[in-house]
Length: 288
Image 1 (cartoon, rainbow, N blue to C red):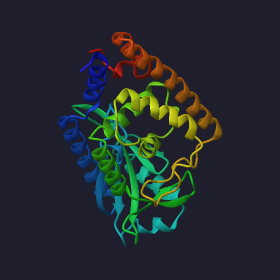
Image 2: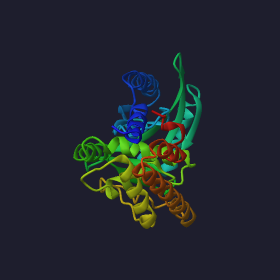
Image 3: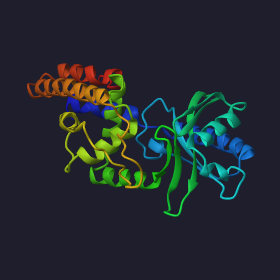
């Protein structure tokens, strides 16, 4: 393995969620679940989102929890109200029991503190529907929408398998780059949606795949980017023209740096190549 390959491999390893971190997230989830079930009539809860799809990057914050409201329970009438009503009511119910409680789109964000520190979770109230998935409130769109997180996880697992288990680490690299450059792609989930569409088999070196991805992103920022599960709204529906311009500009800059790094590697200047990659990934890419 070359110096650059080693740097990418170490970045991949550093981004992996450890068993201890998983256990801590699950313990905190149980704490939230127990309190939530004491306040509302909840059928079940489960960890979902990028945590469940294994595409979460560190630090392990904003972990998604789906809270399925019990059919016929005291909170069931919220299903027939405006979507902000249930989110605001859930925030009010949790406010006395957790830190930094706030409504955030479809979810309520809460902070949980323990001996290991503090972490945030996003609780999404949802209802089972007749389609076998879920109805979730979407105050930003002013309507209820369908969601199928299990199908998202299944699609991710299948793509990762097709890519010899390299797709999930690659998505984490894309998210790391996005975070390093002030998040020009405004939704973490949108990066995954793009990667499902833009990555082609066979999956090659991370260096080349990154350059190809940002090059394709430049040409495809206009979308549309549909829900991979085929049930929810267009993922990029609320993204503005200005935000798309920012995505295009960031992708263009990233492509230039990636091409320079690949050229340095081809010329045998592997240490200089890693320093060039670090302009994109920062300290998330350790020096071998």
